[in-house]
Length: 170
Image (cartoon, rainbow, N blue to C red; front, top):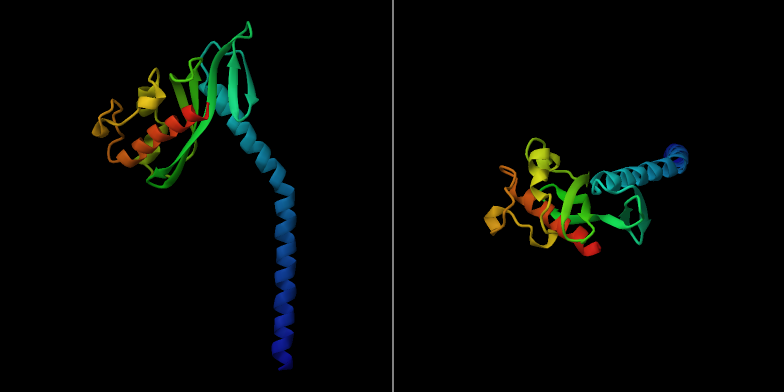
């Protein structure tokens, strides 16, 4: 009995030390990780804005792009859809000043099948969305004019829905 108690105390002490080390590492890395994600989001917002945008500001979760004269030239917003083949798809979508016309998008988060669904960020696929109304995006199989990624129709539908969600956020 004494030996079992000694083992339990030893294992508890080891687990406690490990938990303390993990907590310390988490405390040290939480801010840099959050800062990196924020920078990635801001960089994506700048990248999807119309070319005329000179400055970008964040207001109520939406990035507003202004031209050199201060007039609104475009917007960027996050859009997500849980219906991707590998789970959530999260995009940063740029819009013209009319809040409907898509400029382009950048992938923030996706866990789609490599070589198939992960082509959602390819220029060949993403270029189809430029100049289109976000509310009417559908793949051809659903009566729209977006050519789905070969063998990744589920991913293609999720991209269309994520872009519509970004438009709704505006």
